[in-house]
Length: 126
Image (cartoon, rainbow, N blue to C red; front, side, top):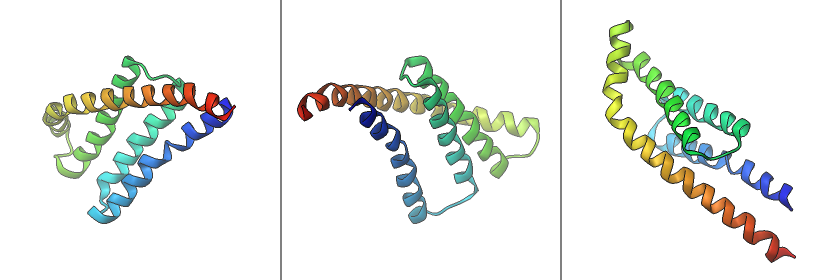
């Protein structure tokens, strides 16, 4: 039973990427999507290795996504020099706080939800 729960949890990683892709089909696909997907996949890979939702891991994931996605923004819309790179990351800092807040909220929401499912599901099947 525990193996089934972990299979369900691992397959759920694909749901946000599928929804993101479907919304991108409607809103439009651009070069930045490559960096957004790369950021998500990097974090998913990291999560499969760490296998725990802790404050430090969520902050690390937020920071990795910040670095990858804003690198893409720099390539698309800023001068291709060190000043442009610094300006790009500097301009993105105000949005980073909201990103961390959302990541912490949803990270702990998922941790709580999976904990509840894990504790309830085996007793309901028996």
